[in-house]
Amino acid sequence: MSAHAERVYPEECCGLLVGKILLQNEEGESQKRLIETVPLDNEWTAEVFPEDTSTASAQPKRRRYSISPEDMLRTQRQAREQGLSIIGVYHSHPDHEAVPSECDRALAWPEYAYVIVSVRSGQAVDVKNWALDSTHQFQPEVMRISPSSARDRMPVSA
Ligand SMILES: [Zn+2]
View 1: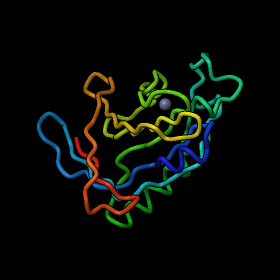
View 2 (view 1 turned 120 degrees about the vertical axis):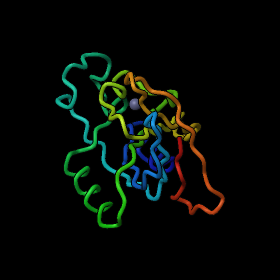
View 3 (view 1 turned 90 degrees about the horizontal axis):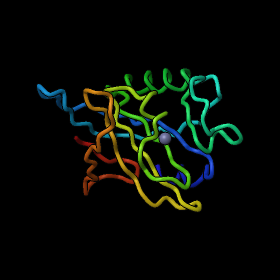
C-alpha cells in the first residue's frame, strides 16, 4: 500500500483489501484478516460525487479517489473464487494526515476497513485504519501485522 501510494504521488492511490471477516459479535464488531491488497487505478471524475463543490477542481486526483464499478466487480469475483471477500478499501492522502475527509465519510460503506496512507514529499509516513460506527462516523480500527506475514499479507482486526 505504501509503495503504491509513493508511486502515484502527488495523486491519491486507491485499492481494495481482500480477506476474511473472522467474527462478528452482538455489537456488530468484526475482525478482519487481510490476505491480499489489490492496487487499482484512481478513476475519480467530478460525476462520482457531484455534491462536492469544494477544493478538488484543478488536480482532482490529488484530493479524491474513486474505484470503478468494473474493478470492484472483478475483484469481488476473484475474491469469491478463493473463498474470500472484499473487506475494505485503501487510499492515500498526499501531503495530508492519514485521517478520513468528509468526502471519505460520505462515500464510505459500513462493513469496510478504510486504510489511509499519508504521503509527504513522496514518502509514505503514516498508515491508519478506520471503520464506521453505528452513527456513520469514522473511528480508529486496530491494525496488527502478524510476525509470519508475507510482505503484502497482514491481518487487520478490530
Ligand atoms: Zn481520503
